[in-house]
Length: 269
Image 1 (cartoon, helix red, strand yellow):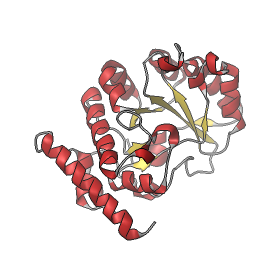
Image 2 (cartoon, one colour; image 1 turned 45 degrees about the horizontal axis):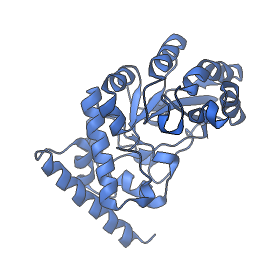
Image 3 (cartoon, one colour; image 1 turned 60 degrees about the vertical axis):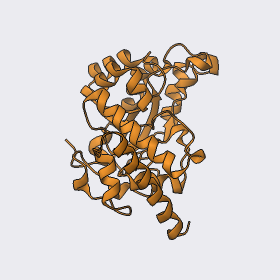
Image 4 (cartoon, helix red, strand yellow; image 1 turned 180 degrees about the vertical axis):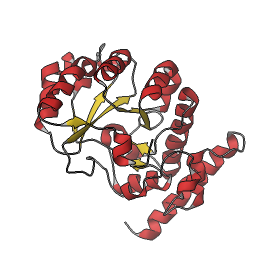
């Protein structure tokens, strides 16, 4: 991609975000402030939360950058909250950290669940309403990031981490550059349990566990889901059922479960 083209698209994103901020009452969110400070290198002081993690920019970040035998657990929240209580209970009882990637729509529909996750774990953004980003214009990318950030803040009362996970993990260099320009690092995953497919999709608890174990490497990032896609005929969260066995299997292979916040943001508290 030519630099001139990237700069042009980034400026379009910034214009859209500025307009959105004005429509919201003339107040900039930290996301907008980070974007308007500079495109190529957003200033850390433009955000009150840790970041932006510039060393993670320009990459999909599908693993933690470490040789230690550690694994990070992450959950996407875009559908219902069927598995939230179980997931949080298991994590609490096993003293295990996790990071949750919420869509803005989920935060608006399920504010109690969003607050419960944020009270105990790190929260990242998964867009506003889960579109394919390669179908979006730069202005629409900005809208997705801005609206998700605002919805998560309003639901949880906390600033989300400077982590963004693309819907469907449909990343492109262009999309990553645009999200980076807004102060977010793209954080994807090493393996998906496929628990979201449920029984109707041929998945079982054991198959979900086996997928995690088969991809065990230092720095592995595991993707799971807290809810079920009712539109696809799922009515329970298989990942919530599989979580205790996933934790046991990871530990049995000599790995510990790390907090993605401190692994990717060493100065985060």
